[in-house]
Length: 174
Image (cartoon, rainbow, N blue to C red):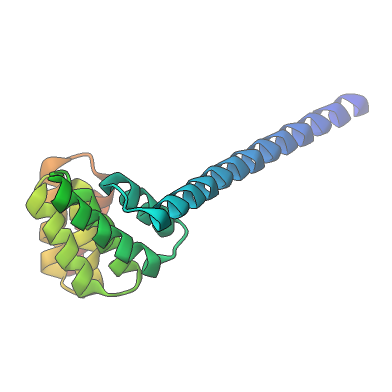
């Protein structure tokens, strides 16, 4: 009996250790890939002008690394390159730019960028969620609620919009 219990506990310990090791390796490989892409894109863009995709990818890496002040000019370059290349799918660029401003608590600039994203793609649910969040931070409860309800029109299963809209409805009706 005592031996079986020891084997059971040892098995649990081995499983936990294995899970931890796998998680650490996944994180290391993810970080390594991110750093490799960062290095590659920075070198390329320092030598020559880039494409919309390259500027967007590098700016997104900076967002992930929470270096928002470096992401903003890259998103702006992506928009300029998109204009030159005739790229029409620019809503994600405006959304990323809005997110960078939002993260720096520049809510008015963030709102402007999210609205621009929605001009280009009115059913862009991520931009709607982000716009609603920015309105909340500005204490514009009615606009935030309307924005989340708009998001739910396009994606009725949107958990973020459902949760936030329900919370805001309670605030508005109180």
